[in-house]
Image (cartoon, rainbow, N blue to C red; front, side, top):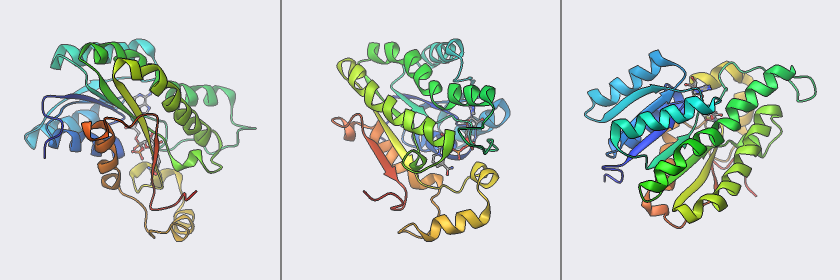
Length: 249
Ligand SMILES: NC(=O)c1ccc[n+]([C@@H]2O[C@H](COP(=O)([O-])OP(=O)(O)OC[C@H]3O[C@@H](n4cnc5c(N)ncnc54)[C@H](O)[C@@H]3O)[C@@H](O)[C@H]2O)c1
């Protein structure tokens, strides 16, 4: 099955972890993939791995917090592949993030964090929607988290914002034939998670999840590709928990 043949997809934060899994899976289903990240060394490795497996990918540097950088990325994707059909807003400050309370987190850190983890998705969407519309429409997936539904300090607050952004933008973008949805993953076993979640906390979290294991990036791929694909052509503004049943409402 190749749902994305001839389509171009930008995946931010694709140098490692979940973003790298999304980029690889999109390429395996035929997409031209732009692996976009701050981390040039690892991003280039991900793109090279895709190409070595017979896919089409390029690495492009981006700082999603910077509107000019987001626009430059969109222009470069169009120059390389002729159009932008899909965007995955996955980049975030997560690995090795500060653990602090909303009440005490240093203000500069909080502002920087929100500029990446919340505004980054808006910057990227503002940069791609016109080329996407010009190509006849497209689809966007934002990376939220079950942290939005649980107490998780400023990290969770940014994800609450991502959920709101997804709903608000679905309304603004629908007329341009652009769909936007979000995935809210539960705890996923990535390098980054190992730096922020101590082993005993993981054990406790997993014991309370109906499917008693952590997720893997590959557990998220099916949901991401579904939401991006034409199979979801009448789905927009939704937040899909992919979390082993961690959140049941
Ligand atoms: N791992 C989990 O348990 C989990 C659960 C729920 C949601 N998420 C979300 O999934 C996404 C990826 O998680 P991960 O575990 O793969 O994390 P990760 O830290 O491995 O990946 C984040 C990537 O974003 C990049 N990045 C950071 N700031 C950037 C910027 N300003 N511009 C461009 N790129 C930038 C990093 O270089 C990195 O490659 C994040 O949005 C995270 O919040 C993760």
